[in-house]
Length: 353
Image 1 (cartoon, one colour):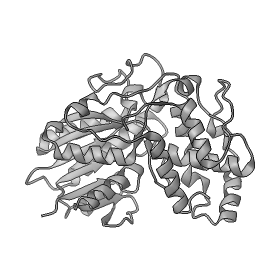
Image 2 (cartoon, rainbow, N blue to C red):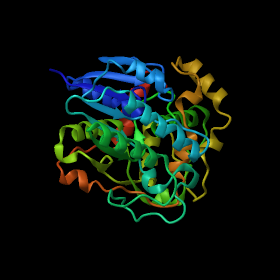
Image 3 (cartoon, rainbow, N blue to C red):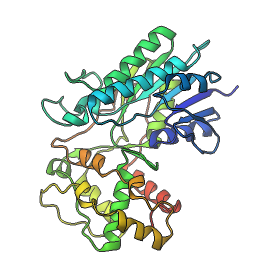
Image 4 (spheres, helix red, strand yellow):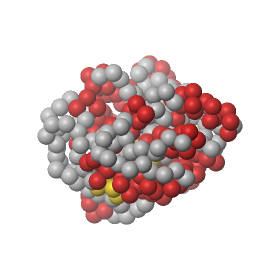
């Protein structure tokens, strides 16, 4: 019999890629999102995880073999991030019927586990890079830690196995996503090409010159499924990145070439995209109308604040994958190809010209 999965955040970058892989592998897939999700082979479940009673009612008939938690809700402060996002995990796991057989719950967090929350992102004393899973929590409040604690408590109560997955910046397709560097850079490059503006790197010299890595959503999906199916990966936390490293001084030119724009020379000055794109909503509407694009709302496609947070970091950020490799996860994804695949998909979907 086919195994059953519940993908939470199925409309997001990681969730949609995970649902697609599970469908391809023959799973029965329920895709939970606030407004449901339309995806081939996915049975939509609409629920607001902040509403415990409604979540319990919606999930009463769902008894999954595996649960993939790939969502979070951004708030105005870390205290609110902790309150809201821990409650979402708690409400979800409380709502599911207690497992009668084996169940695995995989939680997706990220490198803010090592870098700290947005309020203190990349500041203060940080662990040595490359980040390794054995490095403990920072001495700071962090909603990722609160989510983990809810997962651990429910696992101890209900007897399921778990895994935690920490991707770096995720590349993939999603509309209306709060953290979406790939689509943000595609929109920015398109605006630069259409208006003749310079394609200017927005970040820091440390990011321009230093080594970094990223995570393709398809790579994250493969890692999530691997952890479910690999007993040695149960009750463990893992980093998950593509497996290559690069410098933005190289990648920026690669992206520029794909869009047919010239990369502006970098002089070490931070020029945030949030400032560069502040007045571009009207520009994008004009481009969308002229090219017949499917989404004229710039805010639905671009998240400059998040791209600025990543590219403005004052330290080199690279991630160790040794723990997964030792346990047999060998998948690899070149990051430039991840960007190019996304750009091609966005063009095919008429989201960029």
